[in-house]
Figure 1: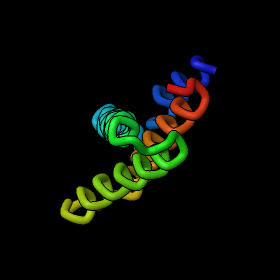
Figure 2: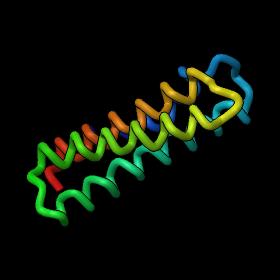
Figure 3: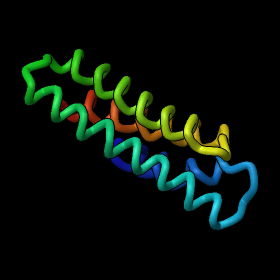
Figure 4: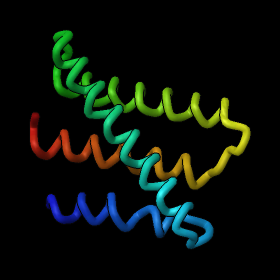
Length: 102
């Protein structure tokens, strides 16, 4: 299962990229890594504040989607691939949290 999550994080930017340039792939990887980190950090914060696991997962996902969407709205170059990569990073973090129960 860890290998599947790792494969998702490593190979998905290439699948999401509209062009196959190295810069575009790196950009998508950074979007996924950022939203993954935001989601896990938010989850830990919500758990620390006393929320239960389910509430924390959904609150962390909302926080991650809100921050990444706000960044894309303020960005002059809105790219659907970035939004997809953001969603994948959040989904991977939620899946990891749900499976590994931390």
